[in-house]
Amino acid sequence: MSASITTLQQLLFDLAGILPADTAPLFAMTRQAKLAANETYIREGDTERRLAFIEQGIMRAYIIKSNGDEATLFLRWEKQFIASHDTIIHRRPSRFIYRALEPTTLLEIDYDVLEEVLKTHPEYEPLRNFFLMRMLSESLNIMESFVTLSPEERYRNLLAERFDLVNRVPDKYIASMLGITPVSLSRIRKRMLDKGKG
Image (cartoon, rainbow, N blue to C red; front, side):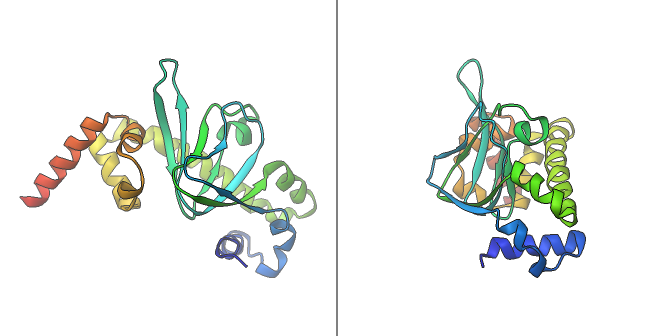
């Protein structure tokens, strides 16, 4: 049994008291997907409702603006979920592209299949509610951070959450996610370094 299934079984137990032995119908519907570095998982315009748990790797969600520039919406890494908000919540084609930044392994399930499983196994409903609430919470956190925090504060929060990302993700993607240029990101790092020396 993979570490991801064990993690998800623990999540189900914590959320709804479901014993690992009773999760077989759910995990029978999952499959492992392996992505090469820079391979696209969800394309702009895709309508498939896929939900995945990241076993290994980093995923980037981004959009290509009318002027050709790329804007990063978010990054996701190990033990996090990745899915298109558009297809799962709004039932519309994805506006964003979801791509692996390094070799990535996912444990995925077709969300439509999950909804069918829920009809006969309503005890899994807390897990779906958890997914949806997590997606909504993440979206709100992104919006609120741009209103309430400075770029440096957003960068510090990212470092606090996952310090090793700075060595795994190109600066241009981190800067784009923070809403700044790579030059501004360099200035923030220099300022933080200078403060650390003081």
